Length: 205
Image 1 (cartoon, rainbow, N blue to C red):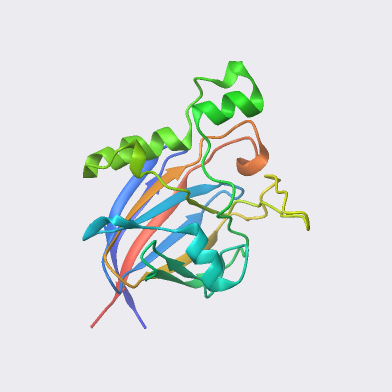
Image 2: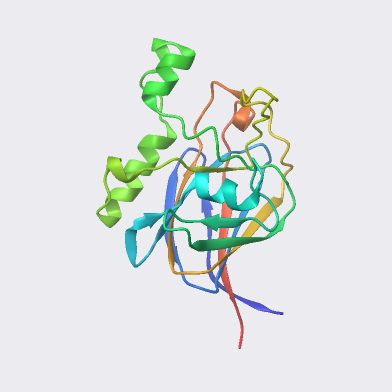
């Protein structure tokens, strides 16, 4: 089935991005250089109070990770998007987003003023009238976070290769916020943040 491209954009390294994805449209995120974490949030476009829920998503899948076939769930228990293609297979929703505060705690005071995902989210969310308190635990596409039997986890080298991609079909109109992760203190980006590509498409009549 052929698809019509609605939007095709590069998100520069370390930068935020957002768009509305309409019901039935497909969001494709491509890790063009490999080993780049893509922090992502979803909100119902008609009611921002309904937003992505990592807990509901993992409970619905019975899995600690997001991948092919995953239903992205909202805090209202509704399906927001479905993962319909995935060439990577490792996507985290437990480790959260880096922030200036967490950088300081994890990596030392000298990192206090480094740019971070939470700040990206706050800046981008403000365009839609959302505030810091609307930033909830997020998805980390292409981020490798092994969880041991005791429940401990840590961020390790990413396994995504240049050109790896994930596709999600929207089951409702959603606002998508992305922070193309700027983290340089752990290996989630191979210690070198790079651009990613986002494409929104829909089936042609």
